[in-house]
Length: 320
Ligand code: XMP
Image (tube, rainbow, N blue to C red; front, side):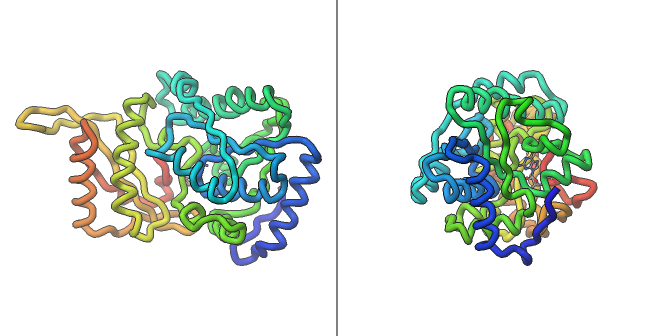
């Protein structure tokens, strides 16, 4: 495996030149596809891929039904400004069918991985001439998967899985030596809008990583609405990442003078530099109370809001 390049060591111009050459050498005059989720890593890899391949690269946003509010439209608009056309593929029903009845975290992750790589991309590749998928795996994804903490949805080779055999195409991972801070520095050098490369991290399994228990369209809608409130109120917090978690347990609350056996949202807000360790941000109690009251106001069925005050480790940033 290639050696880590820290953000300080990273010479962005030399790195871009080297990766552009590697991608061109691998793909030749064929076609490649890249999966854009709008997250920092996939946005940076999209720009790098376009620099290398131009019209030989098709960029696809898979609408898996697990994304944040307005995400597909926003991502398409950002990339249009950069001259990159993004195709949106609607695979919502496939993802929800694969997740039906699953409650175990690793089984949920596996269902998302298989649906994404085998079904959706497998089909796109079969129906096109592309033999390469370009994706934004970074070093932290590998570390956690290899350590057995979390199976990140985009890690194969390090687990002994050959994507060509398993899914029928090769995977190129030009960011594999970097961590998040290095990826951001590269994003800036590639001319990506600050709104994109400075975004808080968002996981591949998307909002499904923030639901304890079964992932259904209704439960996604609940965490999606809570996420709107949390992201709006914490965007100026300076934190590394912030998110909500929908719990499975219900608690007794009251609404309109009646008992309401309702849902619970946990708020998490992390200070971190590279996601390997993290500690809860010391948010003011006033801000926490505002988050709680706006979640209860805007998200039907929620009667309890908590704030996580444990660090990683032993916590992890996402909930599943
Ligand atoms: P954890 O939850 O393991 O997260 O402390 C560390 C960082 O990685 C992100 N994360 C993921 N990113 N696919 C990804 O692309 C995944 O499956 C995944 N799981 C967690 C998480 O948001 C945090 O920034």
